[in-house]
Amino acid sequence: MSSKNQSKGGMTLANRITILRILAVPVFILMLMYYTMGLARGQAQELHRIVALIIFLAAAATDALDGYLARSRDEITHLGKILDPLADKALLLSALIILTRPSLPTPEPHIPIWFTVLVISRDVVLILGAAVIHAVAGTVVVKPRMVGKIATFFQMVAVAWVLSQGGAGLFAFWVGTAGFFTFVSGIWYLFDGLRQLEKHSSVPRPDATARS
Image 1 (cartoon, rainbow, N blue to C red):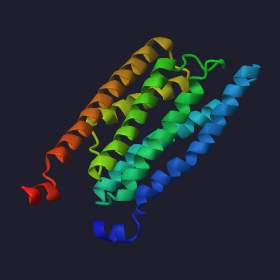
Image 2: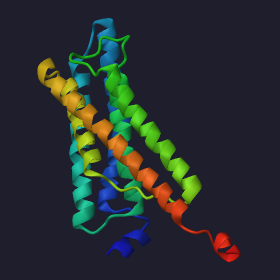
Image 3: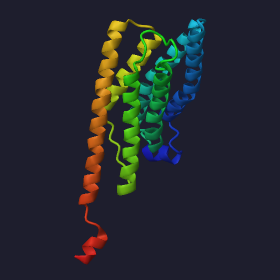
Image 4: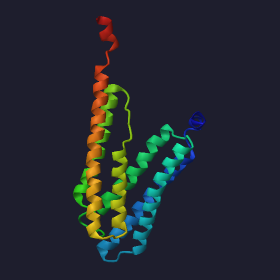
C-alpha cells in the first residue's frame, strides 16, 4: 500500500487534510489581524476572534486526525513528513507573532514576548542545525520526539486559551508548561543533531582507507 501511495506522488487522504490546514492559515491570519486592528481602534469585532478561534481549533484537531489516518492506513509518505510540521509551524508562528505585538492591545491574557522569542529561536536553531548536518553528512535524519509533540500541544493550548479569552491564572500554567517543553525539546533535538555529526565523523572515508 505504501509503494502505491508513493507512486501517486504521496497525495494520500492524510496529506490532503494537511494541505487544507495550510490553506486555512491565511484565513486565520486575516481574521486575527482584523481583530487586533479593531482592538487598536477600540472597535474590535468579536466575530473575527471567534472565526480565528474556530479555524485554530479545527486545524489543531485535524493535526491529530491526519497523523492517525497516515498511520492506520499505512500512508506515511515523504511529502507528509514535510507538510505536517510545516502546517504546524505556519499556524503557530503566525498566531504567536500577531498576538505578541506589544504596540497593540492584544487580547487578555496575551502571549508574553519571551515565549514567542523562545519558540522562534528554537525553530531557527533547528533549521540551521539541519542545514549544517546536510552540508556535512549529506543527509538529515529527523526523529520525531514525544517531548516535541508535547511542546506543540501546549503551545496550541496557550494560543487557544488567549483566543478564547480564558483566565489569566491558568494561562500562566499553560504558557509556562509550553515554554518548558519547548526548551527541553530544543535541547533534545540539538543532541540528536550532534550525534548525527559524530556518527558521520566516525565513519572512515574511502580515500583514507585506500591510503592506509
